[in-house]
Length: 177
Image 1 (cartoon, helix red, strand yellow):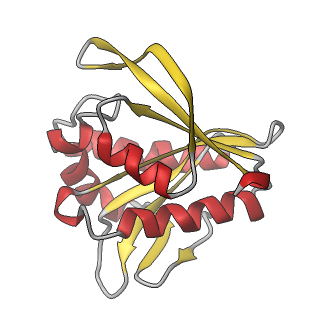
Image 2 (cartoon, rainbow, N blue to C red):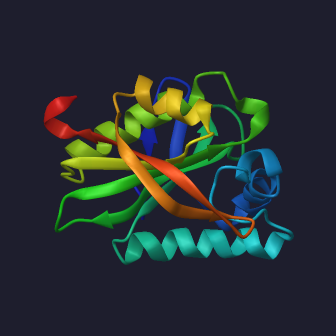
């Protein structure tokens, strides 16, 4: 079972089948998926498959994904977690999305701060990376504010709607935070 994390306004918890509607609401929104490297969802079954994917990823130690829930409210407003988790090499990549009605309220920064701390302190990570579309100004601003540094460009790294995009790669190192 995925450990719960708590911040002042948020509960970061396991994503369950009950969250499929909230996941679909996020991932069927073109504003959310525009810089995600994944196609927009078309049906609830695809969101239900995400729940299973997240659970299997954690069981197999490939990643962990928390649902972001506002304290006092039912349902999630987005997710955040680690992909490409390599316990042996003490590294992972962070990923996140949040529903547009909750943008620019500080929730993502609050969640990323907690997840970074957890990754370093509990998972024993040395490096947390992030891959971000060059056009995704909001995500770049968030990562910079959270202490990530830009390392370079990955050319033709992500595909969105059949087109290759260059991305930036960012990282935060445990000893440098």
